[in-house]
Image (cartoon, rainbow, N blue to C red; front, side, top):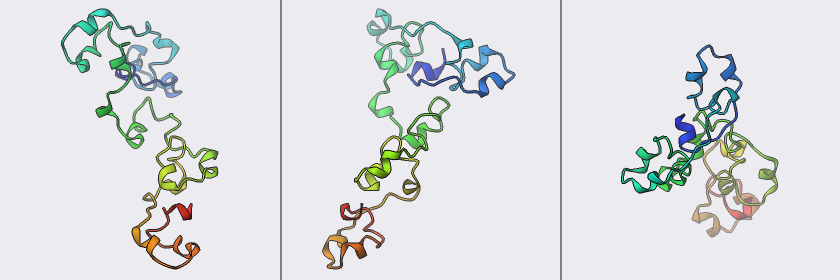
Length: 161
């Protein structure tokens, strides 16, 4: 069973899987290939002994019979990485959160600092530079917001979105 499947990363069969010359016994362990029909494996299950054993779930999730357990499918909160990291993984690089800019990103009124954290918006050009901020001096100054919104440090203010 591939590591990606064991930790619950789901993907489709990537086109490069069929193009590579390695045998399917090797390719089925690759993050982008384990979902190919040539890799059909039994659905992951969670046998009762998985819960009963005292070993760490990191170990148990590698055992036959435990890969379908909730603890093996859903990453623990302390193991969640940001999408910038996940998008480099074989099974995630096709995920909607990786480098896409969906139409709703432009349409929403929230500031880009927030929108750049949303799945489907982090690929927008507005997210490629550091997230806009709203410094305290932006509120304190008396100039019109049309002017202040052009200042570095004020582009993330709600009045500028």
